[in-house]
Every structure is written in C-alpha cells, then in structure tokens.
Length: 213
Image (cartoon, rainbow, N blue to C red):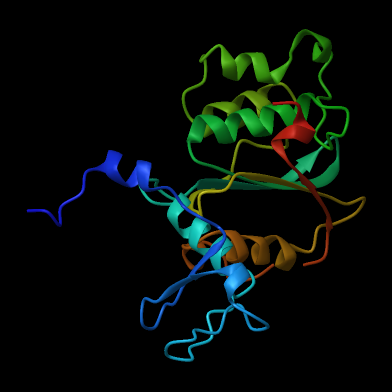
C-alpha cells in the first residue's frame, strides 16, 4: 500500500519549475544542467520543449469540469421604431436576465422605453428583487413598458461553453437576419432547431464589467 498517496501528500510534494520531466522516459533534470538544449532528454533524446498554448488549453478544459454549459436567449424585433436584436448567454436563466437588464439600464443601451412612465422603471432592480423568475417574464415586462415591440424571444439555447456574454445589434432601417442567425450557430449547440434564414447589423459586444455587474 506504499504506492497510495493522499491529497495532502501531493500538496507537500510541490512543483519545481526549474526541473524538466521527460514525457517519454521519465528522466528528470534541472534546467541549469541541460546545456544548450535544456529540453532535450540526455537519456533518450526526446524533445520536451513546451508547446505554446498547451497548458492554457488544458486549464480551459479543466475549468469546465463539473459545470453545465451556458444557457442562452436571443431576440429580434424593434425598440422605439428601430430594429434591435440581442444575444445573451450565461450559466443560469436569472443571470441572462441580469445581463439584459443591466444593458437596458446602461447609457449604451439601444433598447429604450417609449412609455410616459419611463423614469419610474429601472429594469435591473425588477430582476434582482426576484419578481421575475423566467426570461419570458422579463420580455413581457419590457413589452408592457414599451421597451420592445413584442414579448417574443428565441430560446433557451444550449451554449457551446460555460462563458457569459451579451451582444447587442441595432440598425436604423433593417437588421439582416443572417448575421443574427450566424451568432446563434457561433455560440449555441442547438441553433439548427431554430433558424434557417436571416445578415449584416451593427454588432456591439459587452462584458459584465461594461454593464456594471
């Protein structure tokens, strides 16, 4: 049973960045002892030079373990008489609602209320007070307050990864729907279930930091 190590054993073993471990034969040596070709194994001749991006890709893969992929929603319609659309993606439906609400409340928003009581409503507090439980609740509220032309939306979609993102689309005359649909294919696994036509709008990408949340 001597070959069994506990988690704490590995913690105390540590990692020495000055030591090279040959991935072919297991031979180890210190960088300062490697001569001109520090990553060439002097025992078997294997080249152990690190590949750029290798560790980053591994860490990215590890970061997804234990998490479901993101959930996403899309909208294509009008706001204040102008064509608008958006894509929102996050780990939960509530988080998607927060990202959309924060965008609407921000000075950069292309979605604005045309109702007379516009100043009485800030969208983000409505979501954070948990008065809305589902994405459709938010779109119905936006429709009732005159933010969007109707309460329809596309989704939920299954994201290709665990990231969150908000992309707004606006145009003075018409949104070429092909670009809108292309976004779905870029970000979601099940886009085939929703679109078969649609082009070339102005795309604006916002991070949660940009939106202030």
